[in-house]
Image (cartoon, rainbow, N blue to C red; front, top):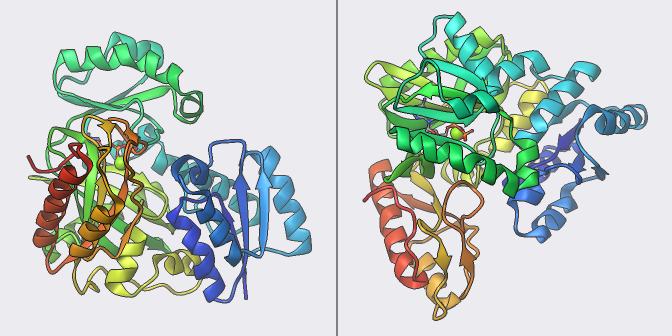
Length: 430
Ligand SMILES: Nc1ncnc2c1ncn2[C@@H]1O[C@H](COP(=O)(O)OP(=O)(O)O)[C@@H](O)[C@H]1O
Ligand SMILES: [Mg+2]
């Protein structure tokens, strides 16, 4: 039996406590309450945390995951009850886990190497220095950004070097897109102090890369890159910054996936990363794969649940076993069907129809045989315009025989739900 410490969590990541218990381990959950915790930001349902705490042996609240708050707690723990690993399913937890690993010698990339992967500017610089295919870019502080890029020309993508839920990011095709972005930036930042505090004030501007968007669900063990899944990701047809759906498996031919794997092996080797579980986004172009970003965490929203339904494997078990130094062998060929995780969001925002009845939604979910959803829809609910991950009504999982079929089925579902709620959902097909 090992002692596994989780720090912060996404709502779906709370399931990892149960996975660790099932593997026979002792579980500690450290929850930052004063800083931006993913559980508090993303979960509208506090009972979800309470339920999963049933699988936790020790629940500890800290103000933040900064060393000054986290390290004394770990220091006390290590004396009473030595731990074997410190891990996180949440973006907010990974750098803290790396700092803890460096101090107490648990398995994790060093803060330096991990930082080169997750800070978008450092990642692009590493790729460039190693001759790995990657768009041209420049890095600007907020003041410089207002003047516009010096080198990169339209169309381009502008994003904080470490962002959150698409806040302060934009794809600019015209000068007027960029002017609008700059005008909104200050007002938007002032609107949410919480988000303002997590999102960096340095920006990267990248050449716009044309291609289809995919993810590779990656495990790196002893420096070797393995895939346990790939996805094809669908973006809003009217604005491709906004992701709406992920189809798993991707439906990409074996040869293309091998090409992606060879590319990502070069990326992780350049980063000097020996271990970890990553959600990697890339664009497939006419010249091959191009990295978008590396997320040093489990795939998002309800995708881990879908993966388990489709393959019978619990991806949180991979994460735990990997960081305990146990053997983990995975491949991306174990799918018996195709699935889509669909974000249900309002294209323009608005109010859910006053004539909406929950039974209608139940009937729709039953008709599509939806195995899992996190929808929170009721008559009169105000829904913000879809701009990132905040304003969504929830996620649904839909299954079908093939990736193509499930993508079409997902679109039909969105069209049908429009009629029920009296709002236009954001769609990936016109
Ligand atoms: N250089 C680029 N060229 C084309 N599209 C891009 C580029 N960078 C990002 N994107 C698009 O914008 C989305 C968000 O960018 P990403 O780097 O993943 O930031 P975030 O941290 O907000 O997820 C990506 O999913 C992709 O669709
Ligand atoms: Mg992304």
